[in-house]
Image (cartoon, rainbow, N blue to C red):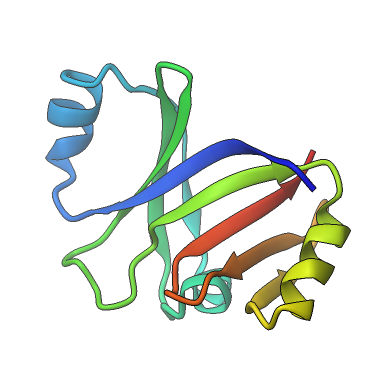
Length: 126
């Protein structure tokens, strides 16, 4: 069940950081901006409101910046991996009692797992 890095997500509280830090200093190229609706935000991050997201690349890394008024207790930091056999990875996590969240939707399901420290990992099918 080897996995490959796909992206990481960070919570930011100052919108100016997008240009001043991520673009001007780190060289982030913005690919898209979108709103994670409150229903999905609740299912994934236990936040019951819409979240603005800016996605792009820094070098060969894919980045998602989640905009927040203040850094909440529950944050949106996560690491995303791609697995060639996502069902086997889900089964292995469940067998070892690691939390798995599967959100069924089209065109593909969203899958998140947590380690025992609460670190959040998104798993995409590769």
